[in-house]
Amino acid sequence: MRILVQKFGGTSVASPEARACVVEKIRQALKKGFMPVVVVSAMGRKGDNYATDTLIGLAREACRNIAQRELDHIMYCGEMISAVIMTGFLQAAGIDAVMMTGGQAGIVTDNRFTNARVLNVDPTKINNQLRLGRVPVVCGFQGMTADGEFTTLGRGGSDTSASLLGAALDAELIEIYTDVEGIMTADPRIVKNAKILDVISYGEVAQLAYQGAKVIHPRAVEIAAQKNIPLVIKSTFSDAPGTMIVKECHEQTVTDRLATGVTHLPNIAQIKVDVDDVKTHKESSVIFRTLADAAISVDLINVHPGHVMFTVAEEMADEAIAKLTSLGYNAEVNHDCAKVSVVGGGICGVPGVMASFTEALSMYNIPIMQTVDSHTTISVLVKLSDVETAVKALHEKFLLA
Image (cartoon, rainbow, N blue to C red; front, side, top):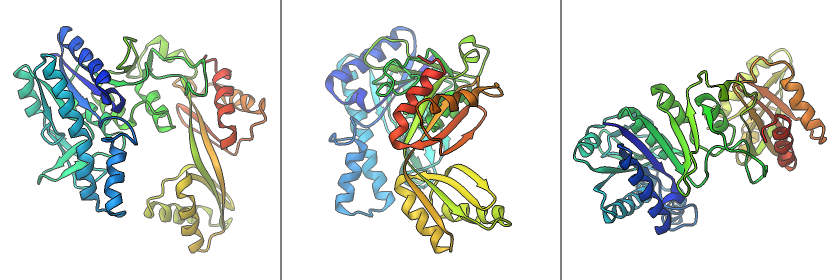
């Protein structure tokens, strides 16, 4: 049995016209001899009646601090509505389909409501439906505890659901359908001549996602990579081939290019904390433990004699400063920053990459506030007002157009 997992995002199921396109994608898969397993997100985006954020807002109108368990119950509704409607569309088109919740599909989680960790995936019920010739339409984003409590998987959970099911079912391929035709070399709203990538490695796309590109959740990439299942990012609304995500292999298109893409993450604050010169490393441990205990995520960490620098999400900056000043630290904050990153499997160990990076920004008089690099990524912190110019400059410098 050739199994194909097809995941459709919120815009792909938001209207009757969009759902008709989904039916056609599923019909094409059947014609190719696949047994598709369909995963759907809640319909639409924030502001639409059945979108997840809309449902959360409705619950918080009743109680601003509503319990996480109850929040998971209302968030469950978005995907259930979407799956029922999509199943109905398939049945009306003559395709035998059956709706399944995440729990019915065998996704077992712990009880960390709104951000549950998956413990196991039992594909038995899905396999039973496939043997009957039916197309399972599974609610993405959902799981269930061993004692029957509803849970959700956190942001990007529908992508994660698709990869989890693909891995459990030994799928031949996982297709992630969106409203764009593939992964691009930069945000096309900023770089008008950004290109669609034909192929990209698991590692590169995970880094693009971690650094701010809204393409696929990095956890979904990691799961697929563990089983070496190819992923394809493609559009529901066209026949473009999309972007194939594969292991880091000997594909010339992957290894010969220096950079793969430029991405950006806005709304970041930079924090500088003064510490004792002699006790820098000890005090930095206290600082980061304090922030971790407050559930404040940090990035772009630099530890120097006498001070520690790092970044946090803009909305967490005031809380971070309050926590640190309560411990007696002198902390300063730079608001309105952004992280800009160049990602590429070919940049590791190549002489002159950092020089090219800094030259591109200096040409436009963009101050670099902080830098960090890894095996496949170089990132800098710039002022938010400079972010679009920085993205364009780096895209041009690394010949991604």
